[in-house]
Image (cartoon, rainbow, N blue to C red):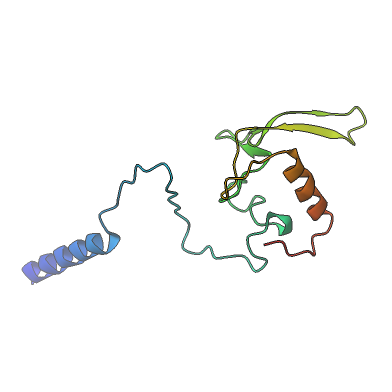
Length: 130
């Protein structure tokens, strides 16, 4: 009886390791490996940051797009696409300078016009841009 229990335990452990896979190491810098909780699925509104996706539901930083700012490992807000910023005395005007070394997936260059057009879309969140 004890031997049967040990054999069963060994079979279960071996099967568990076999199902987990051996893991891989991919050193190609052009590959993106994503690990997500199994209970996360695409939000009903899709992956648009204009309707809330990527706005704090996963450690405050979105998964697939960059932001002007992000949080570091200490939870402090730090530049991401921004290089620096200033705020007017009345708090109504924010001036944000952006990085000049960023490309979109189609190899077009990211610039301040992209930020401006995104801000315009934010004023009209009913538009489906994805």
